[in-house]
Image 1: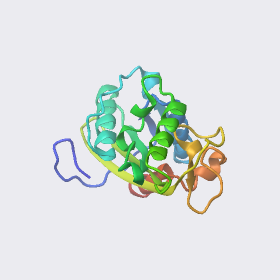
Image 2: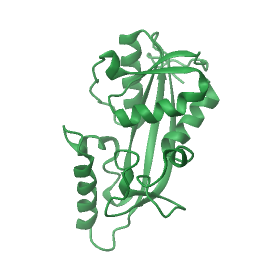
Image 3: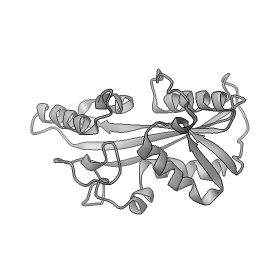
Image 4: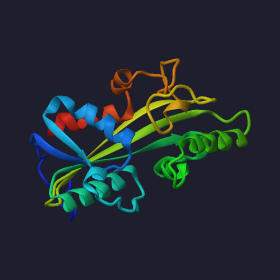
Length: 209
């Protein structure tokens, strides 16, 4: 845990009350709100508050999550939680990675993004592996600049064509290890038990709630 100036800080607990979800992604906000449900937290989205989306200039998932959380906390005067997550495909040298949302273009067209991933894999030839994982970094920030970060991961494979209409983003082409259906085919409750976001959230709950 570090503060905004890089110094070590003690673990800080999040008190019940309003918490800004520093995202304009409706699916992500909904998923985080569902995970927060049991803890007396009142989630409010950055979009609802009219907060701008800062430019994601970090080179890691955690750096981008911290950047977004600190900006939202500073502008709102409330604690803020930001998520930076993405799909990492081993055969694509880690792409789309931290640029997962950008692969969807300005219109956030994840059908396009999934097709780009599949086309890039296909171009690698029939021997290219389909191993992939999702990473989720959660950053919890306060208006005074204190920030804490937690990272989760789930491993799986890329499948084609996309399957299922649940979830969001790349979920329809990601099949987690040990399962025969994609995240897009899973019921939300089942996904919440095992996803990268659930993994990171469990670490946040243990530390801050």
